[in-house]
Image (tube, rainbow, N blue to C red; front, side):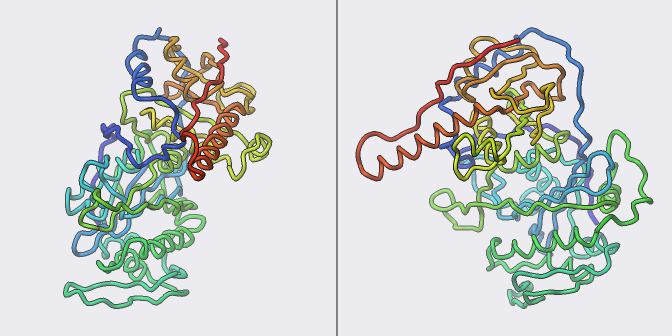
Amino acid sequence: MTALPSRRRNRTIAAALSGLLVLGAAPALGYVGWDVLRNSKEGTEAKTYPYVAFPSTPTAMIATVDDQQVVTALAVLVLAPGTGKGGTIVSFPTDASSSQTAEEQQVPMAQSVIVGGEEGVVSDTESLARVSIGNDGVLDQTSLAALLAPLGSIKVTLPNDVVAADAAGSTKALFVAGAADLTPEQAASVLIARDPNQAEAKRLPNVHTMWSAIATAIGAGIKPDAVTPLGTSGPATFAEFMQHFMAGPVQVFNDLSTTPITGSTNPDKIDVGRIDISSVVTLMANLAPSAMITPNSTLSFRIENGLTQADIDAAGLKGVTPIQVTLDIVQRVLFAQGNIVSVSPEVFTLASKKVPDTTTVFSAGGLQSAELQVFTDTFGKVTFKDPPFQFPLVNIVLVVGRSYLDGMLARATSNATSTTTAATGTGATGTVADTSASTVSS
């Protein structure tokens, strides 16, 4: 097993998000507007607030590689807060582009070890997942089988045949689709198996199924009493991380996917796709706030969205869920080149712990008039308040209110009108910017 301890770091990632976000959901706000916040935040009056720490969420990366050093499966693991036993597996497609802009050569994560070695795949994963990786393992089939050995038999139902190619290019089916009872060695071979002529989209369902089967095999935990409490610095090694990770129940997120990159951006027509960064950030900022990185030199946000489906339905929005409201906000912050440190599905910062009627902005250090205007342009009707406490790395806490739904409804109506107008060939197209007034309170 190869395990490289990597230091927590806050790497600078290129700010361009071309093609990564749904631009129709972006605010009518250019970089110049957000530049006001970037340039003025350090000039605001310094205040001291009590700190509320995020729960410790140590992270690790597993990258499995075949004998050609191609990454065949990739996952970020997050230890459960509080107990430090068990946690979450977040599976990343290996065809996801490791490039940060559309102008760069599009290289899939599958090639990260070949291009940059073991440090390269760690660095690329940190950029992709927007988290600092505390421990990491780049595992071949033998090392992976040793890691899975404590699980014994692993039951799985494979959605597709598992196909592997040898050095001469001949392919064979290691396992056929259907139910199987696998040894750790066989389970490792499923995650390692790769046919160069098979697209990642075809392989990925088997990879997802294996991660879920591994979580099921871990069950309530492997030897939970054998692990010792973690110190404040978290696991010192990848082996220690995995001992804690397998000592408690594990959940799996397999929902991240890619959109194929085509045309002039991918002239060689390689198997590479673009991942939706807003979905990644929303997920990771919920699971691992203590490990989030802040790549941009602008403000950093915590988003608290306690809106219920009943709130959304009452606002007249059709086919929208609470998580889609959070995604909409995250998209707008990222488009404006802000950072997301934490996302919560519950209201915490407001004393009432209830969803406010008006979106509430808590700013550590206060905001100037130009800054206030940027927020109203971006989030519609808002109330500004002084925070009762401060979170690590967070400049702004945004507690989503029902007023934000009014803006979403207006944009949805505008987009529908624009689409209808374009289809009939009359009038102008475009979106309508938010013009809601703001309410300022102390």
